[in-house]
Image (cartoon, rainbow, N blue to C red; front, top):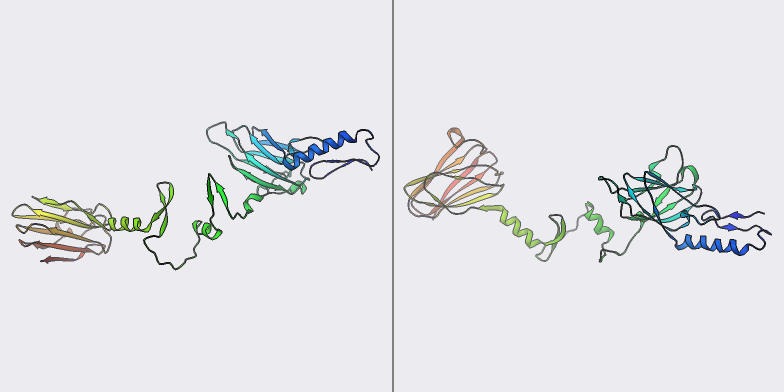
Length: 323
């Protein structure tokens, strides 16, 4: 029987009675092929949009290496076909290409099928700068390449100097999981927050401080000598301290940015003089005049304050409180 070749690496199996006196040469070549197949690494420069990586029977070929690094400047995705299509292979693939234009960097696609209308679902895409371990099933025209890496179950992964010990359940929660656990939140607890593009753990006390500081807008003290407009600059309740400089002055409280249930407090800090409060009955977008004004509260000489609660349309409750 004449020499035959193994189905994956093309190692020559010498036929009975053949190659008298040359066994050593063939055997040494076979060992070199085996060496490449077990631990060989090859850097292959590519360009354009297509590349073929071939394993040749009885020869040292690029496709016989275990680890393939693809380099070169690409202007588009490059489809790399593993040839022949009837050899089963496992490769470690690295995409170390660069961008030859301004729209990259680009991915490479590992394919073994050679049908006229390739099924892209049977290919594996390796993004620029990344690694993948792929399995080529060698089933001919419609051969499938599978990304083994995507099915790894890692108990611990070290990335950029940090050991990742997340469980699958924890990662699934970050990925939009909906399962809930009954938890009593205490000051020592933490929340994951996107801090201007950086993911950090924030103490719930920080969240409490932020929420409380945004529940009420505390405006600076105003001395009134003429009309004063009090407007919420965002959707928060408002606390406004005022000092009435003389005689009787007017405050116009507008509804801009308020939502139902929020309130406005006008705190009169002087015991002398008086003021009248106009509570806007509209949406805050029109002038405080005519039917758009609900007038009704006057703060007299005694130290007191006024409270108005917004119902979504107007101030449905207003009251003056005196001490």
